[in-house]
Amino acid sequence: MSASTYIAAAYLIIGIALFVGLLLPRITANRAISSPIVLLTIGLAAGMLPLPDGVSLDPMKHPALTEQITTITIVIALTGVGLALDRPLQRSRETWKRWNSTWRLIFIAMPLAIAVTAVLGWWLAGLVPGAALVLAAALAPTDPVLASDVQVEGPTVDVDDEERLDEDDEMRFALTSEAGLNDGAAFPFVVAGLSLLGAGSVWSWAPSWIAWELVGRTLIGVFVGWVVGTLLGKLAFRAPRSVRFADIGDPLLIVAAPLIAYGLGELVHGWAFLSVFVCALCMRASDRTHEYHQHMHGVIDRLEHLFTLLVLLMLGAALTDGMLAHLTWAGALVGVLLIFVIRPVTAWVALWSPHKVDRAGDGVLGPRERLATAFLGVRGIGTLYYLAYASSHAKVDNGAELWSIAGFTVALSVIVHGMAATPIVQWLDRTRRAKPA
Image (cartoon, rainbow, N blue to C red; front, top):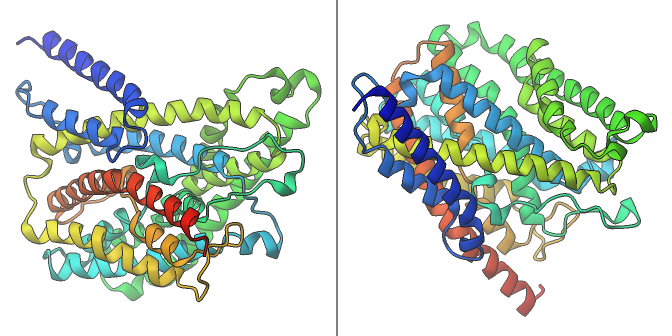
């Protein structure tokens, strides 16, 4: 076939797949199957089709392109997450306590999971220590976008009093807010893995890594997000009427805002994913009961859905076009252990509490909610981004093995969590109704 025929066929496959992806949520609602699973399956089938000589869908061979596509997708997703959360995060001890479950997942569960996964990658899969740490950090971010039943539904605005605005489901809040923060929080550990690969002794880079990569760039990223989000929030809700976006009604401000936050965050060397999430939180806090938030969230939600489906389609095609060529039983076992043991155990430990009742709004999860939150740590697009970033910015030993393990783990997570999310949520709802305590 000619090159133009292949291109036309690619457009046809992508168009049909996206159409199916847009239709599926209405068909699969409240069923133990999700549209990401179907899109991944379509991609798997598409990857088996013949390609022109020299053309490959393996992301390892196109790290720069993969990095840019996944960057856009993550930026859009983080904006949607930040805008959807009703629970405020203000400069008061009380509001920070309400995010207790999030802090535990970020500061306890994630580092523990990275450490255990890195050890297994080195000891079990035979990766060099630096590559094992890069893999563990890349697999750290969670992505509830790929299991929509476990994320908050969107901004609530139809209330008279801002103080009444809060999430009424602690599990959904914990998983959604965790995903908003850990895409940026995992970045220092990816850099640590790259440093371990190239700088030799840990003591030659560890002090500067702690001071700059772990602390300095995190603070810069948060500060940039706060500045951009606060200024754009004032422009949207408090500017003169002629330029007040909330009154004009144009929701495309929410497309410009994350790009500004991300670009500025990168330029000043902060963790730009944190800038995007904090920017969205600050915009949400500017006027929490205004219906303009719903208009903005509607736009960003559609973009997020579109880009996520596209990435999943590409991932499925890559998996059957060579991405799994270097997957060994040991590498596959690392992925299986992460999904079924490492994440559930580390998150359960991090979220442990003597309380026997789920206390929505106080950052306290009951035993059933802790179990569900610990298990539903979906791996997704953040993993692909970090591996693409590492491959683009350094020579990564065991690179082929990393991509194979990561691709297998993300696909396994999409299938397992996609099928489990709806039954788990329905089980929680039934048990709450039958026995409130």
